[in-house]
Image (cartoon, rainbow, N blue to C red; front, side, top):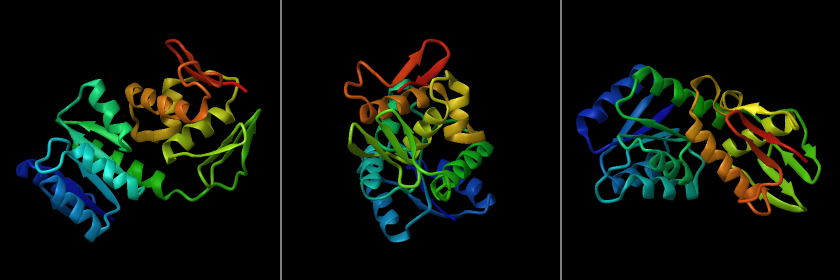
Length: 223
C-alpha cells in the first residue's frame, strides 16, 4: 500500500512518514498543495493523509480536486479542530478527520479502516427495499421516488445500516460502529454524514420524512 503524506511542516511530515513506513506502507511526501496534486497524479497512492494549512493551494481545495476524480481514501490531519473545520473537511469529501496532536497508533488504525471500506467487496445481499426507497449496496445506488442517486461509500454504509434496522432507533455509537468500524469516529462526523445523506434522500432535507433524529439517542429510518 502506498500513502501520500501532504504537510508543509517538514518535521511533522517525517513523523507521519515514519509512522506509516513502520506500519508497512510505501510513503510519498509533498509539502504544498500543488505538489500534492502532482504527486497524486503520478504516484496513484492508495491513501492520502492531508494537512489543511498548505502553501500554494490549501488542503480543502486539494481534497475537493482529488475527490472530483477519484474515490481514493483521504484522511485530513490538521491542527484545526473546531466543529466547523471538521464538518467542512468531510463535506469536501474527506473520509476521516484527525486533529493534531495525534496518536500514531490511531492514525494507523484509522488508515486501515478507510482502506478496508474502500476495498471491501460488494456484499452478496441484493437490493434493500423500504417503501419508496431501494438501495443497491453493490453499486452504492439509491432509488428514491423513481429517481436514481449515487451515494458515497460512507453514505451507502449508513443508509444500509438504517434500512436493515428500519423502524428501530439506532444509537450514535451503533451507527458509528456500522459505518466506521472499530477505529471509530465521533458524533460530529456522524452528524455531517447524516446531513449529507438527507440532502440526497429527502425531498426537503430541512423537514426530513424518512431519516428522523431521536434527540440525545441517535436516528431512525421510517418508510
